[in-house]
Amino acid sequence: MGNLKVPRPKEINFPEVKNPVELNGSLVSQKDGKEFRISNNICLLKSGNILISYRIFSPYVDESYIEIYNVPQLKLVAKYQFKYETEDEFYVPTFAIQLKNGNIISICEKIYVFNGESISEGPQTLSEEINDLYFQKEKREFFYQTDKIFKNPAYVKTRKMYRCDFVIEPKEGTLLYTIGKNLEIYHIDIANLNPESKSIYFYRKGKGFNLRTYELDIIHPSEYYPDNLYIIGNDNYNRTYKSDLLIFDLNKFCDRKSSPKIPLFTIEVSKSQVIFSLCEYDKKYLLLDTVNNGVYIIDMESKQKVAVSLLRKYIKQLNIYENINENPEIENRSQFYYLSKKMIKLKDGRVIIIRRNANVADIREQVILQDIFLYAVSSDFVVSGNYIVSLFPKASISVFQIYAD
Image (cartoon, rainbow, N blue to C red; front, side, top):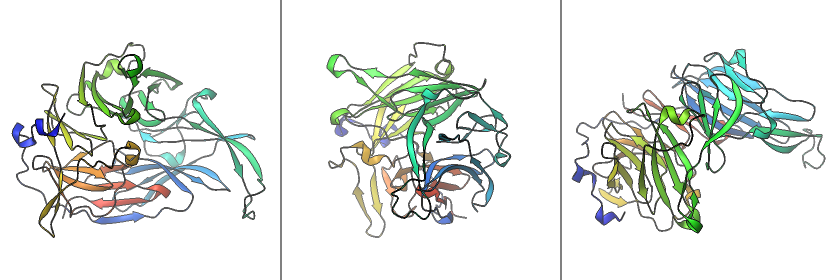
């Protein structure tokens, strides 16, 4: 897809931002993190509060917590510590999310289900113990506080972590997740509290020596087409970047008995770029950000890629536009692990894109406003009302206001 051959947003009559809303972008509140804290994930709750999962990891302790805070004040609402351990081993969860029924779920040595946001009361329901093969195991040395050179361990235990990443519940009762490089999608039947996990999908393309297993980096249940599930498959083997958009029937995909999983449509997005984030702009358009080559626009009616928005940065002080795409120095996608898997459409039609900072983009005009959101926003963020809440390493949290009063 050469840029000179592809229409720009105006040429396909992409929606115009007619009445831009005044934006704020200021830091409203902040909770400072602490040394030895490792953030796991952040989740927006139905109440508008946020849920975070984190660990305290030091030479002396290895503890896991989930906490709920209100927005925007970041006042602590509830807290729970996971404490399951034996003489030889202990378990640490890697995530916590809210289910469609309002309960909160995490995985330790069992599936833990909390009653609504009442996490301080402990789990309401527990599954059977999970088979040992699902856990990542590592020997962990602990030291006395007086041992400043960490030479003589006080004791050694095996740490066990349930292997999962990018956990979502696209359909009530179905938990999907990936592992590591996102080469497969796994399924857990939480409706029946069945702790057995099952691999249900991987995506391969090519023949012979060119056969590649794509990384399934984005799994997105459609907001406009409830029966659709979007999956982005990226291939970045040996600097030969490729990306496809796969569209599945959501119900069939989440049925672990339904096999094979065949997409309704497959759209070849690019033979030279991978996709870092996705946004359902409206019922007609889907936006896919490649960073280096702009934002690709997919027409969901024709199931085709129809345009590309080559974003430029507007520098207000100098009244000039700076091209920020097509950077030949950026070759390894691992440099962009900080990027989010989502873009956020604002009520005036502009879009928030995370590229180290939160940027506000006018897709039609191909412009990023440089003077909005000057504060850093991490890729692990949620939007609660008029606020962006961002989770950083060391379990620090920042709240940024989107709209001016």
